[in-house]
Amino acid sequence: MDAIIKKFPDSRGDAAVERPTREQAEAAVEVLIRWAGDDPAREGLRETPARVAKSYEELFGGYRMDAGAVLGRTFEEVGGYDDMVLLRDIDFHSHCEHHMVPIIGKAHVAYLPSGRVLGLSKISRVVDIFARRLQTQEKMTVQIAAAIEDVLRPRGVAVVLEAEHLCMAMRGVRTKGSTTVTTSFHGVFADDREERDRVLSTIWRGA
Ligand SMILES: Nc1nc2c(ncn2[C@@H]2O[C@H](COP(=O)(O)OP(=O)(O)OP(=O)(O)O)[C@@H](O)[C@H]2O)c(=O)[nH]1
Ligand SMILES: [Zn+2]
Image (cartoon, rainbow, N blue to C red; front, side, top):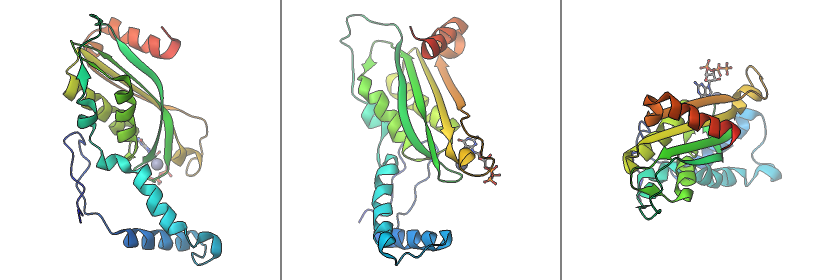
């Protein structure tokens, strides 16, 4: 059985770990139910450890996906188009690595091609791959930008994430409705203020 999750080249800091068995994962959920104060043996909760273990495979499936492989399929046939490509308002759901509570937000991803372009869906897929890991918003922003930069070598990449952290809304400080914005700019978007302003104004106000 493959007990080790491979450290993907694009993962930038997500360590390789030994995977527990499903039985061990279910037992851990049972302990957390008791820690919350409920009885895992009662009818409504009896199947819950199994459901949670299964849902984790989906919610955290990003550890078993390789952004480089998804982005690897690029193409050139775009009729000479060489201006900015921006995918705006990509919904994502992640979990903060401090509390394992949801981060819900939108990603905006732009690049300036240098010959090759990406299939548009691949940008959403890459956001999803990094969202489905335990994250900080800063790390996720950098990972998305770095993955596109590594594979496509475009003239510029800009990634903007805006998200609500439920660990701040449901617990702790209980600040509701605040949005955290993070950005990562590479190439032209880092060096040229006009290009950076152009991408930001397109993200916030539309073309
Ligand atoms: N920079 C950053 N901080 C985050 C992110 N998600 C959650 N946090 C913060 O991580 C911090 C963890 O702080 P700690 O003091 O170690 O933990 P805590 O006692 O649970 O903190 P409180 O949330 O203030 O109750 C908190 O300030 C969270 O708001 C993120 O994506 N980026
Ligand atoms: Zn948190």
